Image (cartoon, rainbow, N blue to C red; front, side, top):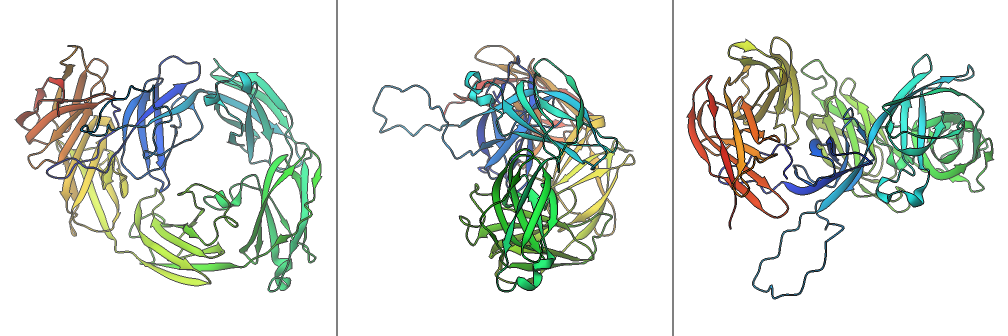
Length: 581
């Protein structure tokens, strides 16, 4: 069966070859078949929603380079750990061995990898942190399997952790997997209060009661202040974290304690929880060392014998031109390491695409990063939503460095209209399925404002949920001295898709609407009864066809060509037949 994930528009004369087809199977824990919305995210930060049905393989199309991390979407009613997938890998289970035969004259079969994504029903768990001694900003819940020998290994939760923010009154709430697990509460600067075991399956919510603050473990040691650091030793601090600093994505979000370093290099962090901890040493505002992991025990002190050597970091200053965004927003600079100098000894071991990143807000056209060690980096300037304006693809850092990013931006003011009525909606410049460069939201009067890195030849996708309208625009030029008005078509094309082989309705079939020059102007997906409905198909000549890719065959329908008039409602039924090469 084919997923309803949207398909990238094909250039004139043929389909694109940039799509990575994979088969995902959401394996539900002790749950009957249910609709699950998955989210795929690659190393560049691009996300794509993938609606599937649990325990059924679905063909999906990923429109950006992999590898990908796939998990249930927030608020979907399901919880699951991220699953790493790479469309270039072979499937784990190639199936039963087939008898040997002469295949010298036959082309090699195309194997589509199958990836399983274990999901659990989500349970809303809440509690309250009490104790006057220290404020607590979050509760960290560590998960562990109660009986791993009897558990399907696909549903193992050992090592999973969930962060739950704590309100000012001490109350917290978050989603947990609906299964039988060890819940280990960890309060920052304190050790866990207790281990708790309870069946969560079949529940929708669970109130945990009070979690009281108690003393915790401590970590102490020495830093080795070599030449160039002895005069800075009293300006050094140690950050203690529950996660490896090499994996910090946006700074010190995993830090659970920060202490000063004495003149003799001694440091001590108290009130910590048990488990693995890492440290990062900053001297005069620069990263000087990273070390760990250190295994802490409850209410006990850990004192490593080996001193932590300090090293120099470099100051990277980035200037952004122009200095101010041309609209009411903020610029964000993202620094990503693309080639570490010594990945084995310094950055530890991690998969490609997971190099450390730093994120900082651009203020008055300037931003600073402290880079530990040497290496090659990339700098990306985006808006708060992640829309990319520009940046530097390669920047080699071997010392303090000043770099400049010049952005060529143009302001844009536009309006969405449907039959001369303004409508609220989302405007995707660059395409909705193809990882848009920038996304704007129009207000109730249909107006949207922003900035773009260029005026000409944009693909623009518009979605107006309140009016159930979706429309694709191609080759759009942004005017310089007047608003960009996007007129949505008030047309409706509906019908049913049937399978010629079975005579039954065909579900999850992609229905394509193409213009005279072969561009995709609309797209819809058939439901369980084979019906589909598309509102917002542009008037004029249109070619309507259906297609579905399964594990064993490729099915298509005969194209229906017509001229669609404004405000017209049209019924078109399509019949799928197996495509013969």
